[in-house]
Length: 396
View 1: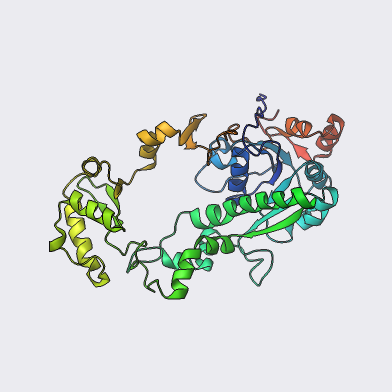
View 2: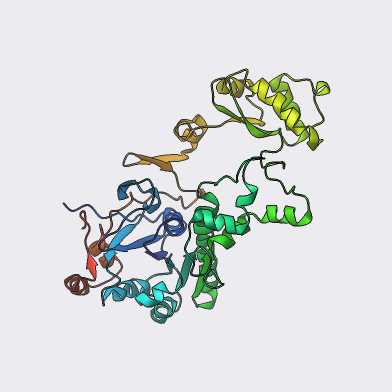
């Protein structure tokens, strides 16, 4: 059964921008999602057979990072597979690929081949360790890259192992978001020079950059060498999370003196009877006092008691975050085809960003997407007969 092709509305600030995304996992799709959310027309090139997801999702329709774009199925090992990608590249502003160095060159869609047909193209490359260096060909995952960046060693509680920070620091923050920024920066430059260029985005480098402040603290001696003993790493009693009477959690962030005074007032504590908050040697004792008091009420009781003060917050579970009155009022989350997910961000006063369709099945829009980008029907027929392109189960 054929599905209706994604309707292109192009309301965001990147309306008119065209991006070819060579299907990958993690940071590449996140980068493409961000650009699509902001209005770019992104075509995802999926495998014509054997496409699969990595992670807890089993259905492509639920893979939020694939939202807002169309999918074409291409066999890049077919003699004419590269021809399909290069035809798309001719009309593209940018390309995203997430293979190890040298793979796209072997497939015939490397930077030289793509820039030959479109000299203005911005060619974005996403890897773990970068395009050069002794580890360029090494395989890995988010946790390996965050470990290599020096950031993982700083995350976690005192006396406990480093804590994996989900995939936020490597894949998404240091990877996909940095690549999106790089693509936009290169397009800004290309608008003046008329020339494209290649972006080497490495998750190790990006994760290190996200930690610029902390590398600076360590270098200057302002950061203690022991994990979990500093102000924002769970060491400080006034910047931590505490368990409440109902087994939930309360976030306490009271670094500045006025916030700290508010915190003590909420907790009903007399500062004269407490250890000096600036004496780090007293932090464990002060943390024990705070923990005992916080356990005396439920999470929501503390939140109600602290209304109007900015030093404490409920630690919300995702489902609670979806329904929180503030988030609901701002539309922080949206529901698309039954899947609740974060709305596009940031917000623009004249050119609002929005999700331009649900995640596609691989190859769902092969013919329609190619035709929309100006590929003649006869050429599409030839590629189909040659096996260079395919159609997914829901292809149009």
